[in-house]
Every structure is written in C-alpha cells, then in structure tokens.
Amino acid sequence: MFSNSSLVLIGHGSTVNPDSSVPTHTHADAIRQLGLFREVACAFWKEEPSLREVLNMVTGDEIYIVPNFLSEGYFTQKIIPRELELAGPVTQRGHRVLKYCEPVGNHPGITELLLRRAREVAPNAAPEDTSLIIVGHGTSLNDNSAVAAKREVQRIREMGLYAEVLNTYMEEPPFIAQWDQIASRPTVVVVPFFVADGLHSFQDIPVLLGLESERSAAASRLDVFRRNPYHLRGRNLYYASSIGTEAQFAQLLLDQVRRFDQTHPSDRPLNRPPTAPLNQTPAEDFCS
Image 1: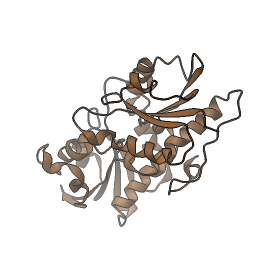
Image 2 (image 1 turned 180 degrees about the vertical axis):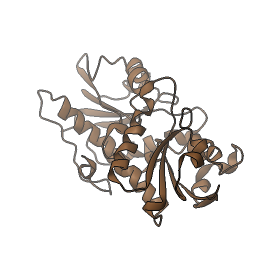
Image 3 (image 1 turned 90 degrees about the vertical axis):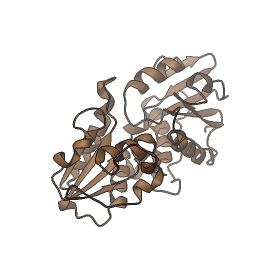
Image 4 (image 1 turned 45 degrees about the vertical axis):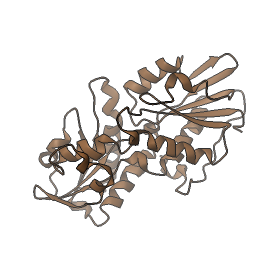
C-alpha cells in the first residue's frame, strides 16, 4: 500500500557530534528493511542531507514526513515547515502530496519507553524509595518545548509506580543541576528525554549531575552509563541513556504514519503500516 509513497525522517543533527544523527539513521534502516515504502530517507537541520535537499532525493507521489523530535516546539512548528515550504499537515506540490506527521514525541508509546529505560537501569530499585527524574533540554525559543516532558511526567505520576516523578531541564527551571534539592528519596533514577546520546547526555548532563567534574572526553561515550549506581550526595543515583536510542522507537516513528492517515483520511484507501513489531512489542500495546 506504500509502493508509491516515500518516508522522510527529520532529525536535528549536529555539526560537532556525529552521535546526534545515529538513532535517526538506525531507525530509518530498520523501517527500510520492512520494504513498505518506495524509499526511506533522512534529513537534518545541522547535517547533510539538509532539509532543503531531501525532497529532491525521494521519488514517491506521496511523501510522509515524520519529525524525529520529542517536543512540539520551535523546530517542528517553525524550522521544518519553513525549510520544506509546508502549507500545513497536507501540502500539494505539483503531482506530489506532502504529509507532515506529528513528531514522534507525541506518540503515547513514549511513556512506556521512559518506564522501560527506568526499569532497565535500576531493576532492583524499590519504587517507594525512588525518585524518577525526566530531564529535558528546555529553551526560551518556544514555550511548548517543555510541554512533552511535562506531559510524560504527569502520566507516569498518575500511574503511582514511583514515590515521586519529577521534571528537570538543562536550560530552564527546575534545573537538573539541583536534582538533590528537588528529589527527596534515597534512590534517584535519571532518564534523559532526548532522541540521541550526544554531547548533552554524554557530557553536559553528567557534569550537571556531579558525576563528572568537567565537560571532557572522560565523561563521553558509553562509559558514563556503565558505572551505575553512583553514590553521590548521600543518594544512590542511576543514570540511563536517552530514550530515543531504544529500538522500539522505529515502530513509533512508523506508527505516526498510520496515525496521520487516521486523522487526515484521503480519497484513496487508508494506509495501514503493519503493527507487527520490529523485534519488539507491537506499537498498539503502547497506545492509550
């Protein structure tokens, strides 16, 4: 049903850190192997191929564009529509139709991925003695930047799985650097609300948490995640990798196409990407 359709995944990318784009490429490869679309391409704001190039790289009559972003904010509302010259969710351009899907961060399955990461990094943590902290970037560019993280915290808090569930940010209050003042329990689990394990999760956040004394190569790569738990400031602190590196993320990106067609039905038969797992749990199991 997608033989004439192309899928484009949009990521932020980075000019200084190649790790930033790795999950987007990895998830694109996983979807490509399913053979559903004519082609699956990636484009980035800060890397090649650029947003302005990608539409010339695909040949489908119908192009689904899925932002690999966790927040509905500055990039999804301003940058991507501007660079791709989108008129809204559906843009007719000659014989082609561009379909701008919601960012993956709006998928209800994100909640379960956050919980999965927390369980994996601290499997023996007693819930009644544990503070779960979700740390996002935060920004003054768009007030909606922190909305997705706040929404996820509220959902998890209502489940009653942990003694407390808290929001923190790198660049707006409450600041992750003050985690020990914000969290009250003896065990603290920190899960980065990021798409990739880049400079923020490898270097910046470890310094802000106090796991490292300075932002350097010593705080980079996977080593920072292998030393759990950290005994710091009278607490046991567990630090997880970013949720966007989870393999199930590919299924959520794909599921955003199905959700788009449900919200914006066309005259042609409804597209239904298969909900069979990519070696993981079906996406429907995450939907509320």
